[in-house]
Image (tube, rainbow over all chains, first blue to last red; front, side, top):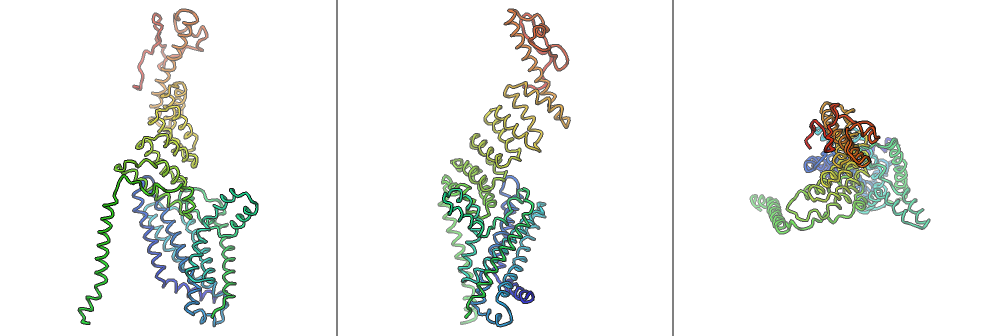
Length: 255
Length: 287
């Protein structure tokens, strides 16, 4: 099984790096990271906060966009172009196909994030602002991309690329807004409504687990175990989402 | 189609694009010229509170705070906008401070604009209080608040209270202690000021601080001693119905524990006829 998944992953990676959208996003990311240097000239006070904030936000934003816009077409485009039939005619399980597609995009994201991070680090090194903790923030952002990719793959198995992108972006927004459920719960009086808030809080993907940008930029301590817990959350939640995606694709009628 | 015509036809879209872009730039210039009303209220001033913006920022609240801060510096630095201070507190205290409470620069620059430019020192103090509440490890915030009280409000007691807050934060700059001592002096509490300056003198790490604090201790000791002696002499006059014959009588009657000597170790001068006490030397600091 790993060999078949790996072969699909490699093929997906080759296909992704031929996608112009990837390069367009990468160019915008690199441009935005570079632009921070010019913008920092306008500030009064420390320039490094502006440069670090912009760098991390660019990696975050463009990483998410890459996950969404490439992830959503992974399965549905194969069905649309009917290439999936050729592939599934071979001794490949459907879940291997889904996992291979996911792994291919993970590889693409790894390269994409590495390029953005490298450019960001070059700028920081030139400016003498390098802080190794920024790498920890980038690693957690990468974890976030992996979870979003899993969601994009799930929606790609369920619906058309447009709907899949809408659903994934909505879950991305929700994933960053879950803390507001706490505020809502405090205002609610009914026990059932409060319980529903709790259920939603734990059921929906909590992307705040992967966001330590502010702490790193301000030099605040990051709680011990943050990385380990975030990795465990990614593995477990990601496994759950991919299992659902595999199950959906398993039952999908391909005509 | 002839080859030349074909070549021309190929160049047409590029030419059209250039012309259209040039025209668009011209139109934008016209729009800028028409809409450049400097007195108009900038739309960013209508931003909702940072608490709500934080929700909409989806994890990008830090960068949003950076952008609004950068914009604010340019906006408040534009002297052509007459009513630019109308929403000053909202931008700094409600928006930027809520979006990124650990961002120290906006507290410092915002309070500077409020106190020095807009002449609203109380507003600056509210911003700095909020900053210190969110960043209790930053001595610079109560220090700035103390400076606003000292420089803008001339409220030296309040300034001393802020400097005292700053002094409790680890890593505070030694200058704060000197300002703290100086505030009591300006507020008229010479005795507390003398005690603070004496401690600064004893713990001074360099010659400059030692020299400055020694001058303050010298002058304050003279002032405190003269104040004590004059006060005791006045009480003596009320009790005995006459002025004291010599300063030693003040201690003998229990009005002073001992008669202080001046910083040079000499007796203070006493004019029995006029009942006045004075210092025979001169003060080091011209105040």
